[in-house]
Image (tube, rainbow, N blue to C red; front, side, top):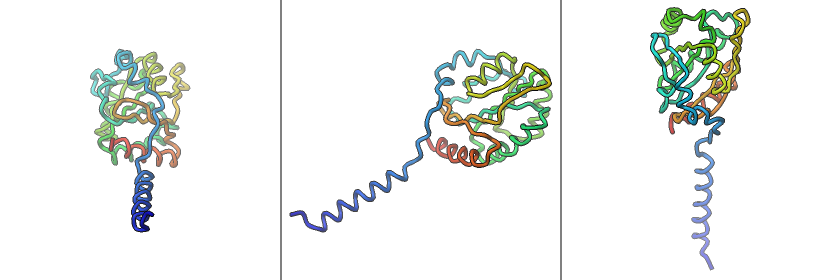
Amino acid sequence: MIPLRFKAIVLLFFVILGISCTKENKKIPIISKDIALHQEKIDSLHFTNELNKRFLISSVNGDVHIINFFFTSCKTICPLMEVPLNELAKKYTDVKFLSFTIDPDGDSIAVLKEYHELHKRSNQTLLRGSKKDLGDIAKYYLNSIDTDDIESLYHTSYIALLDKEMNIRGLFDSLDPEDMAFLEKDIVILLKN
């Protein structure tokens, strides 16, 4: 017969084990590995940053990073997206923010540089490229943009969160406070890994 004390110890062990398993970090799914798998092709796309230097997407390999699309003359969605992105950039200085302008004609390097200096986010890089390259990169980041008509430039309010291995771990609506709360929790998890 097994002593009651031994049974209690075994039961306590399994209870503690069960509790420790439920407090394990949330598992964040990988939505897409396209960035990591097609790195060479993506690096062949030509993007220039606000300092007029060629920017390779692979340069953020090893960093948690966030991708968004915008344009500086946008008066509708962009200012609303900017508020939560500014808060995140200030709070998580070790997260890289890559912002692609969908208006490369209007957003010259000088305009991007001025915009960058105005917002003072050292962990943000503003990028411009050809309309073709912008369309290609948007597809890789599971985003939708339309650069065909200067009068009706379009991008979604969704931002992509990528892990240190360049896998897309989530798409979040930057205009939805609940989505942004989930994004922040996922950032914390990815920074720990």
